[in-house]
Image (tube, rainbow, N blue to C red; front, side, top):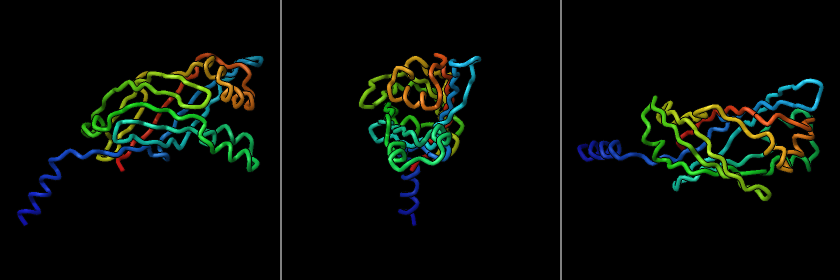
Length: 191
């Protein structure tokens, strides 16, 4: 019995290495796009839901993004099979470094702000963006991720990307405001 108690005490004393992943049911990004090609500017709100990704042991955070994760496709109704296959193909992958031990060290209710440099990986784009994020431990195995300060995408850069410009054009956006506000609300869970 003493050996069992000693083993239990040892397990509690050793910090656990977490294997963190995004909870797709509670992880999304919302963006507000202001359409300028019309009589009056109109702002439309869009969402990228079901964010999936994880932080590997070496601290690499990978976040693949697909067109099917957006609410934009609902405007088109049922898609032909070839279009569904295209919609489920990863368009870009966001990659950043976030040491998991920093999340492991957070006490419940404690936060840290970390500026992550995201690299956009795709065949046609090579771009980096520093994003200040707030990580808040909300439970033993849960960390909430939000932006630490207001975030916005550059509308000019979005329209300069041929793939994104094609998607935006299909949705009726010919010209958009250069300021595209973004809101992140995601949950990392310890597997």
